[in-house]
Image (cartoon, rainbow, N blue to C red; front, side):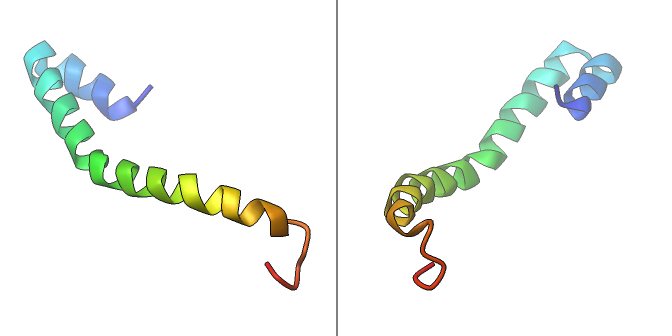
Length: 56
């Protein structure tokens, strides 16, 4: 659980927590999309050379 969400919810209430959560999700979306794309291509591509230190 994220401590910042707990603090916002307890000090500012449910409506503020809703806005905060949506903003937090939107802020992290570009990074998740980029990392997801890289993850889908780099890990399968690197698997064949994982034990070859010279090529790696």
